[in-house]
Length: 430
Ligand SMILES: Cc1cc2nc3c(=O)[nH]c(=O)nc-3n(C[C@H](O)[C@H](O)[C@H](O)COP(=O)(O)OP(=O)(O)OC[C@H]3O[C@@H](n4cnc5c(N)ncnc54)[C@H](O)[C@@H]3O)c2cc1C
Image (tube, rainbow, N blue to C red; front, side, top):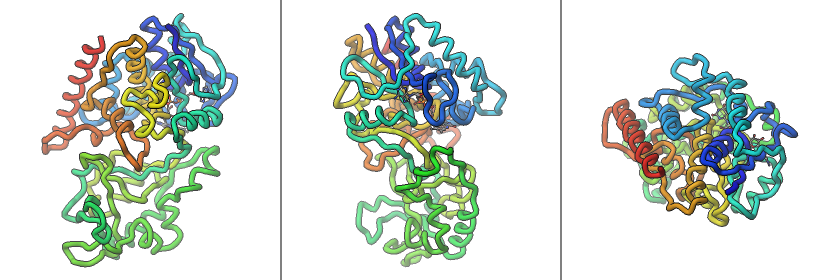
């Protein structure tokens, strides 16, 4: 048995390692070291292109921490490498990036079942089981080929922040659609003139994230960040994403001075998206400034807004729940390209795709990991119908809700439920 893995990044390394450790011969392709994407610089695999932090390590209080523990249980090489190369970073798991990539590269290269080939793959293969994990900077020819096969592939991510439903202050908000047209699903967050002015001043002076050189020219072409729109004039937002017209506040019977609309992000209504608020502000600044909107004063930000270069497919339309392409079930799309966001999420998607693909290769029945796990919830999120699909990171909002009032206790219960489900999954697949 032989399979191909394209891309030796976080997801590809996970996938190749999983197969090879089960005796499957793997042809692992990467353009490195002959060529590099604009962000990759190292000859090593699983390169961390930006921060050296893998985010929180707190499994009971943070979904990113819980995802890490799930991956440890599943035997992730990313987590193994992180454990051995970690550097002090408070509650986060940060690594020495050189040692981290070196550890993974050595393990992959020492595995006799893996043959590494430095080559740019330009087309989606037609035969054989293949995992494509070429990441957010997939080279143009392959990206075009994937687009042709999968139906859609986006090159930029312009996402608005997402907040958890139970953190919205409904005393300061009201439900309803503009001019009453719709299912009444939106949550509206009104501001009076004083509140708007304070918010506006904070927004236009807030600190923006630095773009990489290769992103500067084209990231904002189709989609303007809210802070850039605001800078055009004090009232511009009141005719755009903060337009109050048609939104009668039941408390006053009038339209407010400015109103932000929040749109349901998932069917369960546990997450809400800030409509029209794609932004390039630094994450801390998003929390500071957007929390000035009265209904968001205690908002829990499940995903911050981002605007960056990022290749990803329209997973809800093109992927099966096991990460295989609907139109070509022998091709699996893993990592950031599948529509997850973040180092550990990408590694996790690589590992899970490999677990599923390995079962398929062996003719075994499909067993999906429970949605009660962060990994399973991410997979379900990206493969569930969603006409406003944007990549998703680990957060508690994507997990099925639990009827526990205390937030800390709820997260702890969700974590316990998740870890039990991962253990059950491991028993089932073995
Ligand atoms: C500039 C930038 C900064 C980021 N910063 C962070 C951060 O700080 N924290 C975070 O959590 N996430 C960050 N991300 C998001 C994301 O989590 C990482 O990009 C992550 O590395 C994605 O993992 P991956 O395995 O899907 O892809 P990658 O790790 O990018 O691996 C893809 C591999 O495929 C190779 N490749 C590409 N095209 C081809 C081809 N046609 N043929 C053969 N090989 C190919 C590449 O050389 C690369 O080695 C960042 C993304 C970008 C673009």
